[in-house]
Image 1 (tube, one colour):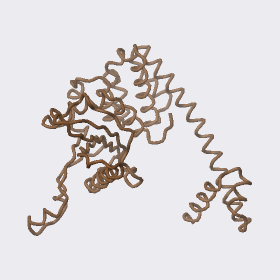
Image 2 (spheres, rainbow, N blue to C red):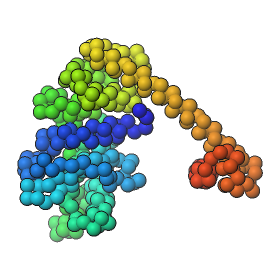
Image 3 (spheres, rainbow, N blue to C red):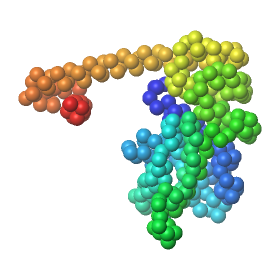
Image 4 (cartoon, one colour):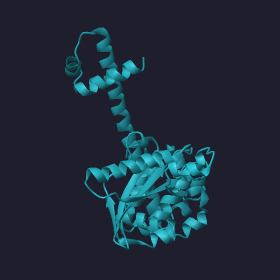
Length: 310
């Protein structure tokens, strides 16, 4: 229940459910693509092609699927949750695609067609345009030297609540509605029955109950709501569900207290390491590590960060 990167964690927990990914592919990808996929072969991969540079922008879920012609297709769901739109999204995607293809080569596989999908729920509209339109070209002949590839975009701002509620899917509906309105607590409060549609069905199974807990954890961690506001948010839901929500919220608070204590202890240790090095400049990393009950690697990292921030 860590509060670190709550959007990424919720995205990964929900879209790792095969049925959610399958429902999304069927209902959001262009029909000329989805109708040629053999979704019976859809398989979640534990891999990721997001490196340290891309991690600021994307979290990914990777699926493999065969086309109806038995060719392998890699379907990469990329989640962008910032409140701004990247200036040149194709540059980030190109890096992502190259990472995926380099991984194919490392595994001695043929290059796999990769469909990059961006699920966006930021507060500004994402204006899509082809990569070559970012260049000021003196003539069209130069376009052949610019990489030509596309990505599929789902900007949740473009979908009405009614359209999302009409999807032929359960978990996916709740997931998209919560992503769409996570920045608007007032809306969540006023429309909790809509946001948690089908929740009475979910709570009857362990799988559904775990999904609801994931929703509650996400809302709690992403919004930092106070207890009174949380109570208002869930008060109009059926009792079983509001009870589960409040129990989950209390668990989040306890986890937060524990995390806070750990962070305080860690900060104190870091300060001690820096002070020791300042008072005893001749002490080795190993000696400071022994004195503070730390690893040498941790001590070296703390001192390096301290020197960089001077």
